[in-house]
Length: 500
Image (cartoon, rainbow, N blue to C red; front, side, top):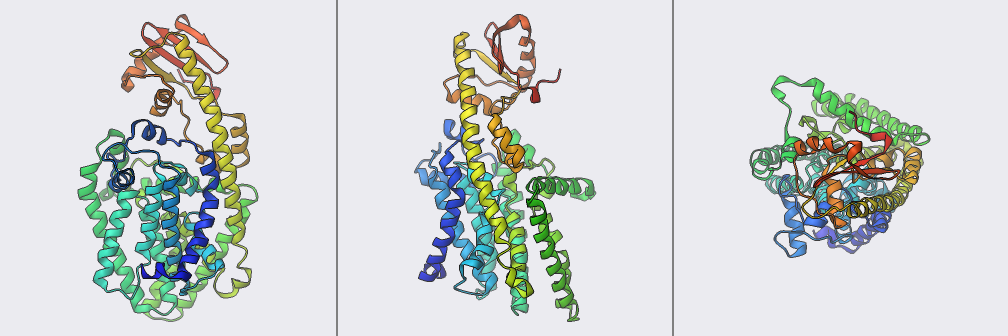
C-alpha cells in the first residue's frame, strides 16, 4: 500500500488507467445490456447461486442494499480498471526490478492485464465487469507479494487473496498461476535464487489450501441452481480422463484461434515463436550450470510455452461441462506478457517496439467491437419491439402462455463485421431470442410482455401449436401461432430453423 501512495507510482497508475479507459471506451459508448445484464437489471438478481459470493457482497455494498442490485455502469468498470491499474504497476515493478518503470515497460507488462481482445467480453457486462476486474486484480496482487515479507505473512495474505479471486470470478485463478510462473522465473533471473524457490512454494501451498477450502466449503454452500450445478461438475480424476482433458485443451485453443486471421496470424504466431525460441535459449543457459536448481529452472523454461497455453484452461481442465467463451481466457494476458518479456531482455531489446503492433491491433478490435455492439443492440431491440407489438395486436394478455422457437435474425451490418473479423462473432452477445433460452423471455418482459414461467417439457409440448391452422400473424422474420391461451413465436432465420 505504501508503494501505491508514492507520487511516482500514482503517475504510473494514472498512465495505465487512461489507456485502460481508452480500450474500454467503445463499450461504454455503446451502453448496451450484455447477456445476463438483462436479468440482473430487470430482477436485480445476484450471484448467490454460482459460488461468486464476494460479487454479491461487493455490489450490495455499493448499492447500500441487501437484496436486489442496481445498474451502476460505467462506475463498476471505472472502479475495477483503477484497481487493476494499481496491480499492473506492481507487476511491472516486480518483473523489471524498477520502482520507476518507464512507459514502455508499463505497456509491455501492465497493459495486457486488461488490453487483450478476449477480455472485452468481461468488460462488456454492466454488472459482472467489476467482480471480474477485481478477480483479475487480486490474482495479480497475490502473484507479486513482496519477497521482503515473512513467509507466514505472504502465505496468509496470498491465501486470503486467492479466496477472494474465487469468490469474485473463479477463472481469475488461471491468471494467478500463469503470472506466478513468470514472476518466479523473473526473480530467479535477477539472482534471488533461494527466495524465488521459497516464494513459489508459498504460492503453491496457499493456492492448494484455498482451492480445498473453496471446493469443500464454499461451493457446497453457495451453488444451488440446476444450471450452476451442471457447470460445477468435475471430471473423475481417479480414472485418468486424458481424453476429456485433451478435449478441454483443444476447445480452449480453438477458441483462441479466432484471433489468428489474415495479417494477424503471421504476426501473432511469429511473435509467440520468437518468445518460445528465447525461452529455449534460457533453458540451455541454465542446463549448462549443472546444478539441480538451475536444471529445474531449465526444464521449466522448456515447458513454459506449453504451461501458459495449458493455463488458458487452468482450473477449467477438471470441469466436465465447460462454456467455451472469451471471458474465461483471463490468463491470455500472461501469454502476451510472456511474448513481451522476450523483447525487453537480451538481443531483442532493439526490436522492443515490435510487440506494440499487436497492442494497436487490439485497440482496433475494441473499437470495431463497440460499433458492433451498438448496431446489434439497435437491430435486436427493433426486432423484439416488433414481436411485442404483434403479440399485443393478436390479443396477448397477462396470464397467457408464450413460447419462443428458432433464433432471431442477425443484422446484416453485424454479419459483415463478423466475416471481416471472426473474433467479433465470439464476443457478440448471445441472441436474445433463441429457442427456450431465458434471455428471450427476459427481454420481452422488459418490453412489457408478461411471460409466465414454464418447464422445458411445457415448451416441447407447445410445439403442437406450430401448425398452419393456428397461424395468426406472419412477417418476413417471424410467425405467431395461437391456440386458446397459448402463443408461439416462430423465428424464420434460416440459419437456425427448428429441425423436425
